[in-house]
Length: 188
Image 1 (cartoon, rainbow, N blue to C red):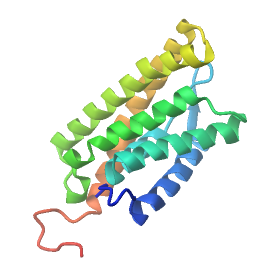
Image 2: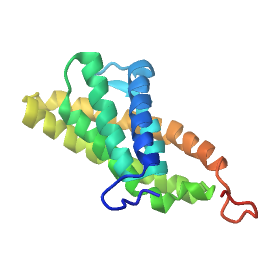
Image 3: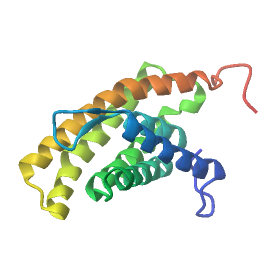
Image 4: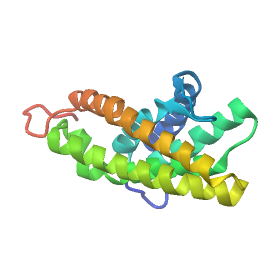
């Protein structure tokens, strides 16, 4: 589904990136839950990012994370915190890489696929929030290590939980809208 043809994305994927980035912004701005950790909140937007990455693949997932997070920062704060924007892109890209393995379009989202999805998202979020975000915060913004590793730890764990719960429910719901691969009726 996410195959590039002659270095171009399909119209469907481009539209998904635009709509996905817009929904990411709305969720990040209006469906975030405040936390006790400064400048960090519990984000439902990553569950939606995971859904889009699994449905549309790594390019769409990465671009939705990049564009959505960058625009949300610009709108909400007046400037972009690039270290975290890069991590949103990486998380979307890495989860999207598992899209063929999960094959949500088959209409089957069984226990094995749920486990695969959650292992992938936990690894992607761990790499992003526990390692890359704090390292870039220190390198780019000269932030104190103890502060950024605490923020990264909280963001990573909360994103793992929200994606694990809400993302799994979104994917299960989406799978029910697809024709099962063993069904006699197929989509045209």
